[in-house]
Length: 377
Image (tube, rainbow, N blue to C red; front, side, top):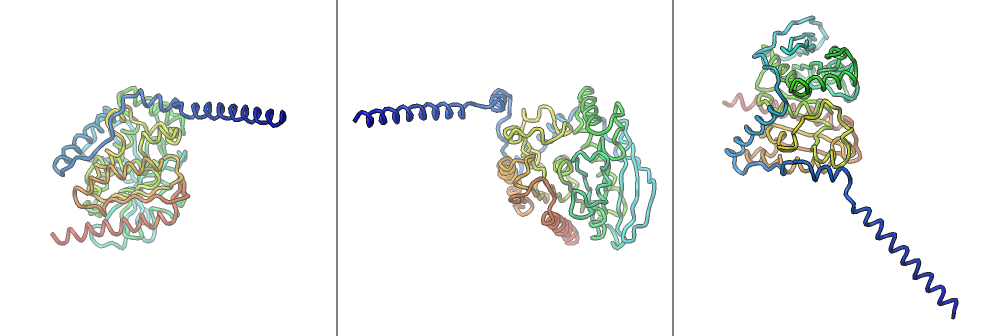
C-alpha cells in the first residue's frame, strides 16, 4: 500500500515538473523577438491599398512615383538622351553585336552591349536585360552571353528569336568593378559606393536605376527598335531593377522578374536582411509603403513574376501579399491576365528551365499582342 502511495506521489511530482517546464517553454515561445520589438517601435506605414476607382488610382500612382523619386535621393538630372559612343560592331552570324559606352552625367562611364537580329525586317521588339548580382562583380553585362545563372545564353537566344537586346554594366560590376570613389573592387567597392552616395544625399540604388533608365532612353532611340514593343527582364538584382524601372517609366510594355519579388517587411520578419546587398536598401521606404506600392505602379502593363518557394530572399508570405494588394490595380483596368505570379515548390534562388520557357512565352505573346494592337489602330 505504501509503495502505491509513493508511486502516486512521484507521478504527481513528475507531472508538476513537466507542467512547470511546459509553462516555462510556452512563456519563452511567446516572448517577442528583437526583430518584432524593433518593428513594433518603428514608424511603419499602414499596409498599402490600391484606390477603388481607376481615376483615383492614377492619382495615387502619381503620388507613389513622386515619393519613390524623393526616396531615391537627390539624383543628378538625367540627360534627355545619352551621348553614346559605339566602340565595335561584330558579325555573330544571326545577329550583330555592338559594344558601346555613354557618360551618365554623374562622373561615370557606362559600358554596354547591343544585339541586333538580322532576320527582322522593319522595326523589331526589344528587351532591356538587367544582369544579376550573385557576388559576380566581374561579370555584369557579359553574363548576357553566358549560361551561368540562366539555362541558356540570354542575349543570343533572344536575338535569334527576333529581339533587339541591350544590357549595361551596373555600378560596381563588369568594366565598372573597381571604378568607384576609392578604386576598391567587389563588395568593398559596393559598400564604398553606397556610403559615398548617402553622404551626397542620394542612394546607390537610385543611381543604378538612373543608369537603367538611360539605357532605356538609348534603346528607344535606336532606329531598329519598335519603341512600343519593349520588354524588361532579369533575375535576382536584375529582377528588382526590372520592377523598379517598370514602376517609374511607362515605356516598357512587358516585364518578367525571376527570383526577386520581395516584400520588405516580410524580409525583415523572416530575419533575412542578409539575403540582399547594401545596394538594395532605400532609406525611409517603409515610412511610406512597402514594395506592393511599387509593383502596383506597373499596372495595367504585362507583368510576370517567377519565384521559388524555398528562396529565402523573397519570402512566400510577402509575395502573396504583393499579389493580393498590387493585383487589384490590374483588375481596375480589367487586365487581370496581364498580372501573373508563379511560385514553384521546392525551388530556391535559381532560374529553372521551366521559368526560362515561361519568360520566352510571355515576351513572345505580350510583345506580339502590342504589335497586333498597333496594326488595328
